Length: 80
Image (cartoon, rainbow, N blue to C red; front, top):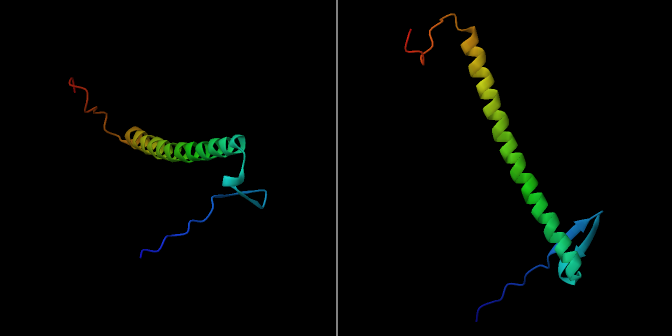
C-alpha cells in the first residue's frame, strides 16, 4: 500500500505572523495572489535591469576603447 504524502498548508508570513492561506477569505486569497504576482514581476524586472546594466557597461567600455584608439580608420567606412 502506497503512503500518501501529507502536504504542508500554504502559509503566508506577514509582519512576523503566519497565516494559513486556505483559511483566508476569497478576497484575501486574491490579494495574496496579486502580491505573489507582483513579487514575481519585480524579480523578473530586476533580472532584466541587471542584463541592461551589463550591456550598458559593455557598450560604454567599447566606446571608451574606440575613442582612445589612435587609429582613425572606421571599419564601416568604405572610403578609407
